[in-house]
Amino acid sequence: MRFQDLLAYKKSFPKEETYSLTDQIRRSSRSVPATIAEAYRKRIYPKHFYSKLTDSDGENSETQVWLEFSVSCKYISEAIYQEFISEKFGVKKE
Image (tube, rainbow, N blue to C red; front, side, top):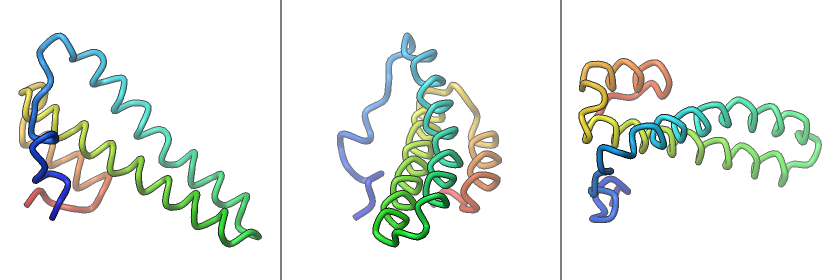
């Protein structure tokens, strides 16, 4: 099962959440490279290194979720979403 299939995930944000949504995208997307940098510094400790890389992957997925909400709320077009996803994640929406 994919997280996108969960009922709670399918609920959309109301219009007044636009600024909060863009803030979430900004924060989670910026966290990805920062957490990778932290992982690099912890590379001599394998468990910490893997943990930080896992955290970075989680932030990456969080960014994808916020972008999917953005499409659902019609804040961005499907074309813009596809452009962001292909650039950031190297994937196409299923």
